[in-house]
Length: 584
Image (cartoon, rainbow, N blue to C red):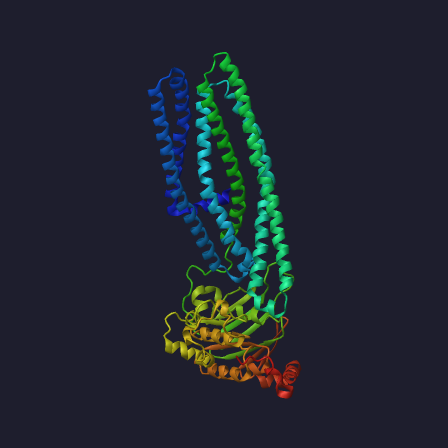
């Protein structure tokens, strides 16, 4: 409940709409509660005494109350919609902004599909709780208090029925809510699983078709979809028990009141008009109790969603800049001092252990190692995508934790192993590197990355549409566009994380030549092929998270038997290193 209260703080300027809506509900309820009193006068005074003017007068007053209740109800709907949808928009904005602040370690705590559900379905539940639940939340108690008070004024003896029914209804509500609360949590988790399967399948739809795995994917979807159906069925099967229970109690109360009221009329202790009005109040009170019970069910579900949303907002960002952060990176020198790293504090082993390495400003360094040797982990510590668990990583002579995060990451250009392009044109993607880059600057970066040769053949050139995730270009073309985008940042440190693996060796050679022409830029090239780094100033060989050897290509060939054996196996016959090339 505290989480839901805190989230209501995101109403912001919509709070005014909510207060106005609350006032309108109170006024609407008051007009409706006057109608049974006027009905009593029509029966007891107008009909019983044949007083036509009294009937007309009371009838006009009833019509006026009904119209005013309708008008206030419509106005409430307008203000409630503004409050609820404004609230939903602000919550989604807050969640999205929080995720943008996350470090890689924070993102490891949530699945992408779960974050999507938390920003869509869970926010919609909270939004609907205000739009659909706020009116009965206010109207129910108002009608309950006014109904009980007015019915007690009419007949204290008959109002005892309320005190009999209330405990029964409270017990039913308690049992339903206690059983349904954990089901709502399971429901949202089932929605997470469904979103995960849908997202994964649609993202990899081309691979699914290529491997003819459509039937397998259908089976996976049927499984999670069936689980969602079963959880939904169990949840709402319990929720609907609320309505018949309340209706049974309500109609039992009506029968009891008619029996008692009829006897009182026969004794002359009650008039027909009073009994009719009393029954109207009974119905309104029971309806108000039913509304309150529905609000409890709505609140139970919204509490589950509020908890999930609060988890995103309350996640402590692992990497933050100090108060007096340094905003200027003097040069591209990098030094690792006794660095060890593990992804989780409770992990049994370090991903990196005992790393001591110095890279001079402007040097070109190659990083080699087998799969799982922590090459990517090593370079991700430089722009503080993760923080070292032990030791220090220095850039420009300062600990990276002293820098402003934005300034540090602007100074470090990294082409990640998994290339990512966004929906839109080539120009829009390249301008992530430099939003102000003109056509000449963009083409210069494309020439350096050897992307100009295929862009000139594409309809539209820089304005060609890449499709969702860059589906309109091949793997090699995607890599070259990502390289061009990174070059546009003009970084002090340039990191290539196996980012030329999908291009042919001739194109790779031209890209390496263009990189050598960049003055004063420290270049770190991660590769699996020795030919990709043999021309660098220094090669670092990683093995199982530790430095196995450091030196030039010639030094390692002469002094490192393992390096020499790898080199000979890759270059034997002269063709193996180009076998995976992508000439697109």
